[in-house]
Image (cartoon, rainbow, N blue to C red; front, side, top):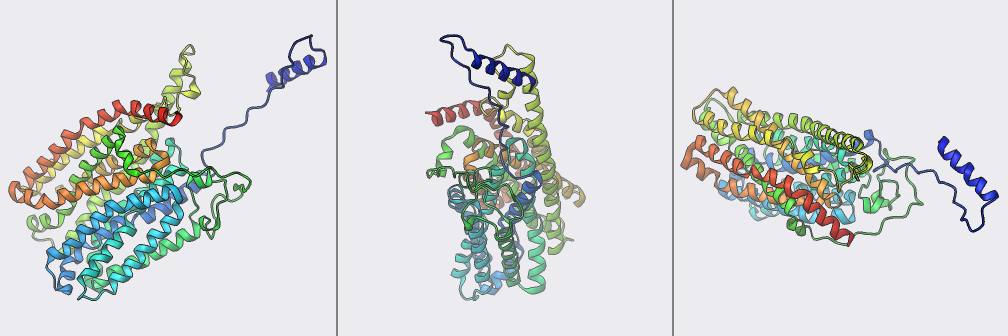
Length: 508
């Protein structure tokens, strides 16, 4: 600060005896340190994301825990398995549609109250199903719709929370932790469902979900702060009582009631996100990979019982742990690699700007949104993950057709789980990077497109398997993924142009 002191002394000298008609320079002001993106410490951010991750378990768990009990429920309601499967279909439809409503509402009214509303809806729907008379099939169908409406939106809401509190340089790691919750559901759901249905009856499944969602509801009511930036800014603005946790463990001492609240954002139709070409490209690519993966998981039970007749239903349920374990490992590893790639490209751009001082781009401007190649930072490793997924998908089909050793098939499942969750985490992180102010809405759009595509493929996968057998079926699905691979480079190419157009519209 010596230079600044000398400047002030010169300014005082000029003030004592200024020349005629010479303006007196104003004393220099110290630069204020840049305000952090969020008031929460790194440990507090991990705590908030962990709570959201637990809530995210319920969307896939509620869907997958139901599968082993379908024959039992069909007998109890005196309906065919096909009619009970309709409850799965309506669940998937609501799973794709409901986040469009809840996610958009959360982007406007807040994350915390919508989280609580979703979990309360899920809890009450589970109580209803557990008490449903076996003569009322229509009520089972209706309550399954309410289950989906309550549980499916938690994933979009959690993504919104991460967009609120995390900078792009740390979002990858947070999404890695956050996706652990949604990945546990497909991993443990079939195992828990089969064990509960066999030992305590099919109604115990829904009492279990009721208790779990009630505990999560109470935890969020007690500990989760509001994070929506249009309500609390960087977290320092004190919101109204409904937005405050009962036991405030995070952000203590950093709230400031004197800070003015940002003006409310106008309602934005989430369907308008589909007109952004870069967003649409990513949604289509992710949906196709997800649909292929969902086709693999939904056929595990039938194919394994046929190919490995020595397995009973409990053994088949345990086989789901292989793909689930791969997804758990992939969630953690991909998050760290995303953050590493971001920091690496950021440092490279800063060094490049410092090495060329005549360049109009200053080092501090090199990492701003309009200059930073976020698509390249996120999608750099995508071809590797996709290539491994395609090879393993084709190999998995032929292992089943040739009745290869069970261990080989399970190892391929682990690799498939690892690579597919890496693909989904990368796309989800990039979507939030592109639309940070609509993070819940863009996540809901992602959920809508991939669930719809997955439902279509699942509805015809048995027909394809019967016609082509497992080997050529999964070669066909791997080929579909290969055809969509150029969308990765399309997204890298058009991404900066699309972002520039959005900035221009915002400024105008």
